[in-house]
Length: 540
Ligand code: TEU
Ligand code: CA
Image (tube, rainbow, N blue to C red; front, side, top):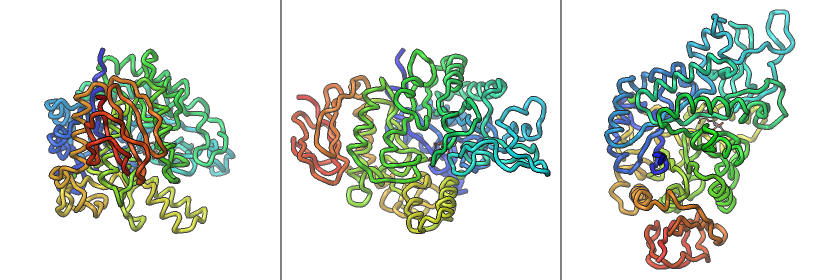
């Protein structure tokens, strides 16, 4: 059967920052509905919504307190039903974020579990600490694991008198997948949304859900303990069961956010015959300029980036292609040049995303080349992980200047500033006070302006999507790398050659002969590749 998700371009919405319909400064579902025609016109075929479920917002939606209701800040279940229906009417599918490694500590299950209510005792991963003291507390946590958000992965709960495991924030306790009741709850969550008409799930940190043992881990600067939970056999089994028992009955699409996964593991997770996930988000290319799971940004080296991309392109029969999401800095500020070549390099990065082999994902704002945010103080930043990293860096006596550089380059709020719709106060995002600062460059970088300028990123994006839709080679043909020169990426897709230059230098490599069908540079004939050029040439 033809897989519907191979031919669609998927657009990620971070609902809090997309469009605010009622002036409270927070994006919402009615706001998304109001932009469906815009999204249709852009050419996208599906939307992935970052979590819209009820949440106390410790990690802005990734801490869920009720999987079957909508965060009142975003609207109601009826609004959600309407969004699904209105999107469907435009042939746009809805993909939900599925955060099942952990819940919020305000979820009913956790409240019952901490109170040892019968049936709920083992919903989470509870353990005594080490070295009991006279007052019943402990000297140390049950093991030495560290959290993705820095610090110990254990928190002591006074009510229960035990520690619980949290791989992310203290308000995100990990569920216990050794308990069959937990599996059944999650299964019913999937069914609930599929029955309402959603078309699939982006599965948050899905390869860490199963903990094989709770033994001490090998010391590691970022993540001590990971060998006990990364991509365990137990995780593969759960994914296979969810697929067989639920997902396959709905023709649902899944993309797993798989942290620290190599090629072999990715192949296993996505092998058709294993029936686990359809695709994964690989971090490999994103880690070419990051160390330690993103907190340290290093220099961008285009050739290293191309090599990693090529390897994944060649080895996996099909996967996703993405350069941005709500956790990552803006691609133009990172892989392009947001000062001297903003439009051209944004367009080149978009071209890359839409011509490699795989299901392309675009993140809101990427289509207008939105840039990183020039934050000037820590209290402008809402992202919990930035605050944690800042505290650790301070404790380690890093120089202030270095810490701030680190924050600016890595804060997840770079991606989360409100969508820039126009140049009016509030950027067309809100009529009120935005929950997170709007990038001051909204007066120059915004949808309204871009739609009217022929050389803009959005106009180029629309052309690229239409071109991909019209030329099945960009879906069906294999990826073949062509030897080029330093800084230039060249590959074939069927009857087409693509040339991408992610440097500010003109190259000695030449755009090949053929018909130039699409270019972000005013090119009419073959010739030396220009700075940040992206060109597609059709064979004669
Ligand atoms: O992200 C998982 C993840 O690995 C990143 O959070 C990473 O640790 C982070 O960017 C710091 O390097 C997913 C979600 O995408 C993220 O928004 C959530 O905060 C996280 O899971 C917990 O649910
Ligand atoms: Ca609102």
